Length: 288
Picture 1 (cartoon, rainbow, N blue to C red):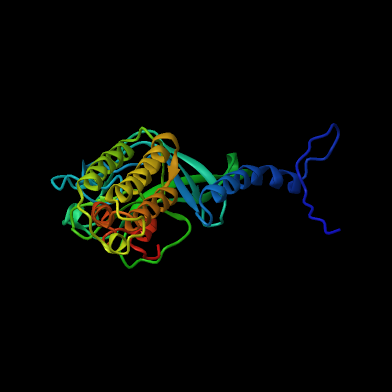
Picture 2: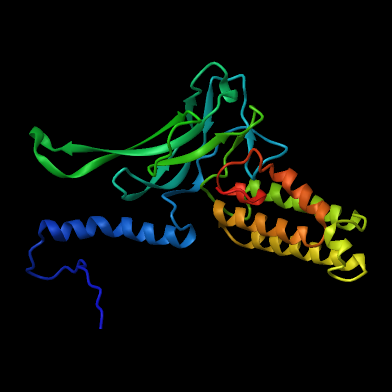
């Protein structure tokens, strides 16, 4: 029989609390965070748990949470929030921003600058009185802008990224959002309009031409409406990560292409995947 074993921390009366035992204690929280994150988003190295949003007006198109920051101020304002973030060494930590913070735009173009606003954590050694060595380090979280061609790194957690029209910033890059979040409510309203398109559409499309569901157009509309309602139920009842939302929208588009193709085209225009980055690229069949 093949065995898998490892050391675990178990305090006992009279036992020696050596360095190896303390290392196990230090690693436990990071391992728990890593296991939870890998279950929700395999391969992810960080996630916005709540907040850390960029102030701005809601953009008319784009992935959920796309905003248009105020171009009259010289900074982006990031709201308070919590995030699960990895350091360069791969350890996971939960970090909290307690008050809004202003992050200066990198040049005079303001929100029209190209690039990505990221969150990252660094660790520095600490010492006790007189420079004595202590068993702790200081975790410092910083926010800053990266150029569009800057290489990605696992310790950089994206908060917002400029999209193609030079006005809007998409923020749904690595987030978990609750059903009551404004970005989700906005997406649900878009789905309401999408359902109107379904029921107002005339018989057309390759699926109709092939008579996949027979000669009754109402059947095609019913299939499309059921797919939209299934997506609405998921969004309205579950907290989802960006990856899970992108999968949901991509699957919805596939279902609409198999029923009312005009609605599939409208969904694509709503999410604007030609300007989208990250997981939402899969809506247009592109790799993330």
